[in-house]
Amino acid sequence: MIKINLDELSEKYKINQLSKIPLNIGGIYLLYDIGNELLYIGRTIDLSKRITSHLAGKTHTVGFYKEFKYFRFLPTNSKIEQKIYELYAINTLLPKYNAIDIYDKVEEFVKTDEEIQKERFAMFVVSLLKVNKGTTLGLHTIREICSNNNVHIYNFFDEVVQKVFKDNKVQFNNQKFSI
Image (cartoon, rainbow, N blue to C red):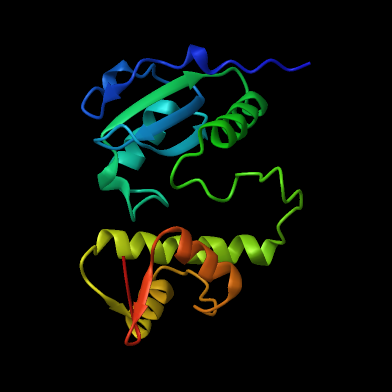
């Protein structure tokens, strides 16, 4: 039996305390906002480099990286351990931006690749809207930004896309989106 223990997570550090991360060590990491809400959980073979990349906006979290104010980490010995701990932490702690790896016990099914891609597209749009909070973005603008970032564009009114939008309080008015 596998025993997973998140009690071994580091203490919470401010983002200016990156020196607290051991160099050349893999593991999982947790990123929080100013109000201590858990935003994102990830895994990596190099904690220091990956967390630094997130904090600099050089990852897929570019749409919300400025929200990151604190981090915690848990060093692990292997990629398998990292994946197990990451999935367990995501499904136990339910971070705000890790929608794809959450397994719903009520709906025990596997998502199709297309559903996953639609969710990723929708989360990209949500990230754009959060970065531009207070500003509405039209369909054409969003399509252009997606195209420029090699993000496949799906129907904005697709059921999967709409669920992500609803969960993130995306509003649509006069051909424009906002949060």
